[in-house]
Image (cartoon, rainbow, N blue to C red; front, top):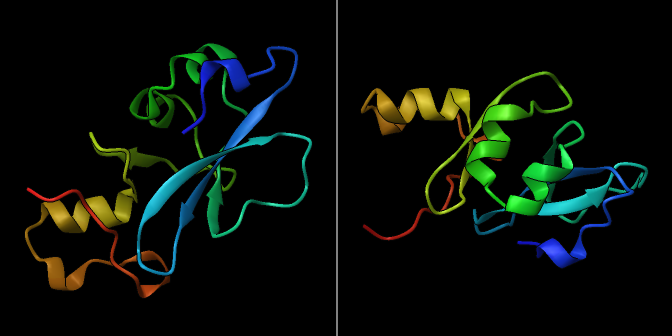
Length: 111
């Protein structure tokens, strides 16, 4: 997670939704002008409003900003991101049919 001090308010940023080989899902801040995506990036958001970045509220960002492919995504209270297709499958109580990105289940915080 980034700190508000790392945000240059004169720049525009996107967020990379990343998934490590173990399934851990994280967010990485990237300058909108930067061409190379962060390691393990699966999706990129469109430009995120600076005020949302400064608050660091990942759930609010996911509600306000779409991915570059136009799709929406969801973030749980622990910062784990999911596609809406994954979320719908999880909420249907049939975990065996979750269409995990890259075929790799997300790692969630213990209950």
